[in-house]
Length: 227
Image (tube, rainbow, N blue to C red; front, side, top):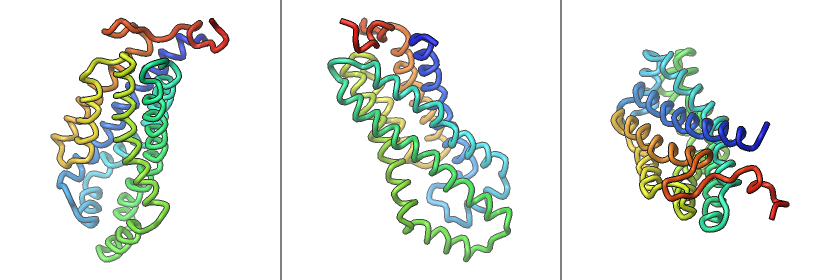
């Protein structure tokens, strides 16, 4: 498989991963439409929308498998100006995406199980309170939030410095992060639009010249032994 083919696959994966991540969040909001819902309210809503909740968990857990190769390709193909910023942002983003897969399982599965097991409200609240103090889950959530917000924004800023994406791409990454931390279905829809605005140019930068005239590295450019 040639490097150009790998870059095309990485570009497609980057776009699919961004869409799956934001789609999973939108589906979650469709089930838990109230910002700040209690654990028992979420469990009750999951009981009424089990299929949508399952779909949200699956697409959220699958997103990193597509997203990470695209991020790694952006880091590997960025040279010169902006490359260090891209490397830092890409590293944080990969960390956050790995954590996001674990976060999807740790978040979506318990509420589905509460419903299946007909768990009483007091037990649900006790388990939810205990989870907020469990070190492994706390570390997972921190890594997820930092990587998917700060990491993604830093990555897009670096790509802009390298002139691989237009100026509005990092702005869209900020909107993507803000939408992800806000409640409501409308913000979920905004998150999908922001994901497209941020990562479509990034994916395009892997396979075709950008609007600034820079182009994705060819086979020779990616060979460290070439002159």
